[in-house]
Length: 134
Length: 134
DNA sequence: ATAAACGGTAAAGCGAACTTGAAGGTCAAT
DNA sequence: ATTGACCTTCAAGTTCGCTTTACCGTTTAT
Image 1: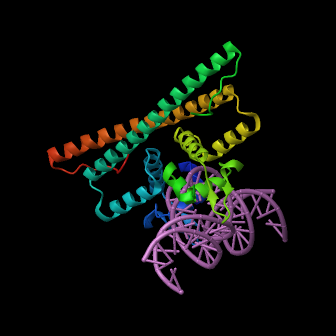
Image 2 (image 1 turned 90 degrees about the horizontal axis):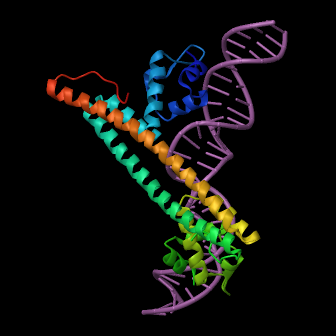
Image 3 (image 1 turned 180 degrees about the vertical axis):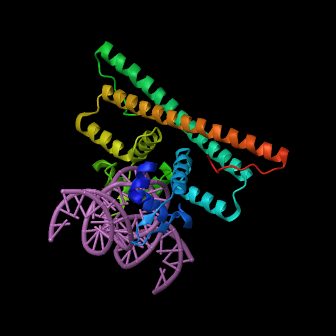
């Protein structure tokens, strides 16, 4: 399978796949070349890249992914380690969510204040002095 | 007030303040120079930068901020416009939160599956074949 | 035979928000 | 007078995940 076919199958683009290779997200067996120096992929690579996409989709960065792949190549990545990594990432996501919640709450407050002010202004027809965003 | 003092007061660094100036986040009256060509700031700039920080903290980018500052300089930024901007940003934050929620849900599922597998493995003492992260 | 479609490489660009580095001028204290 | 702290500018580097550009070789179809 040549690179554009693989791209089709995985929903990535050819440059992205080359970039992933360069970044070490594909190990030796996924980087075979045919006579003409074209990259030649197997079904296994389709699987591999789909897995990469999944892991990325749940919030892992490419650097973390690379690390995981290397750990797996080296020692087979025990299940307990996978569970640990998932737990850590889940905590990270939760933290981010909370941050957003706080920002949202803050924004909601600001909005309420400004809306009230706006209504007062419209009712009283007199411009109320205020600061932008405070 | 010289730049490091301002940095102290605002919790920013001097390079960041210079960068903000360069990016147009400080208008003329915040960019005075004294004899020796050192930047010389007033209390008003402390206020201004703290406001910038606040707006940034609720999710506006520097580019958006710059835009807001320019609108305000030009036409005084009507309250109705501020309300509109806040509303839009709040929607954006909500969207991001939902994304994180979906990712979190997905991660939770993966974690549950792997945890179950891990327990089975420990109980049965026989390594269960599995794929990392699937 | 030739043109389109595909493959290859290397390097640069993007956007966001800064940080860091190089190379120098100024000021306060000893 | 000299050290060290602080100021200046301009340019380049950082991180992330790609995309784009430029330029070249190969294969396939007509």
